[in-house]
Image (cartoon, rainbow, N blue to C red; front, side):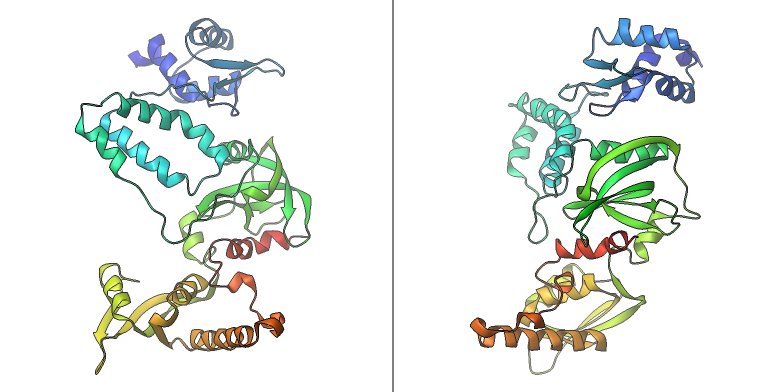
Length: 371
């Protein structure tokens, strides 16, 4: 390939391989990645490329405190390849407002140069009507959005690097049940961002079963050189569909039968609860009968609780009984507020009032129970 011999293409490939600080990559690792892209170059020539060619023209940082040297791009550098176009700039502008509700600040800090480039691009197009469109469009979260859980500054970068390079992580992980941190050696298998928190999926120490680790509970992380152990047949989509994040009560789906308020019926007619759904008018009322095939999980039950008195559930029987128990608890709590027995309250992990915060604790309970 002619491109493999042209230093210009090699420089471009090299720039794309250097991560932003606090991410770092060693000279031998860069050489290996360049070789994977078809560029053959010895270490000394690569060092000359980095020091004499690129570092003089781009904000590249060299960490010389350890051997081999490690390279990173300045965090605030407004460097991007390729250049933005109008559609990409608008997409990044909307993505920024959406991700502000989901990602921790340390991750947003790493993305800020891209967001800033998009804003600068749009601000430079004052005469273009599309630039004004960005000021008139916003994204809103579905329901009450909690603030993203804060992470240690380098945690996201280290976790992503370990996952992509299939390396082990040593972490100090805060146990929610024990209230203290414990040292774990994690073999990463996947990463899931959900609501305002992110979770690392993997095995720990010598255990073979997959567990979930909340990134905001990692107090310290260290990237190890040892290769991570690969789970047999792991597929992240099947893992999620199996109810890992939905707290399923059964592996099969059930038929939800309920009477719904006309406003809820209208909403479900536009945005169905499932692909197998029907709505039929009820006699002598403007309510409708809902039938839908849904998973028997807490996620759907929390949605039902959120509708309050705009839904009357008939099936499945498990949920009817659960709703009845909750009603009894609520009546007891509010009948005599000053003397109510708070011990009758259901666990917070089940609470429909806390669908994004406390249920996340339930999702990682397997990690918490690890010896």
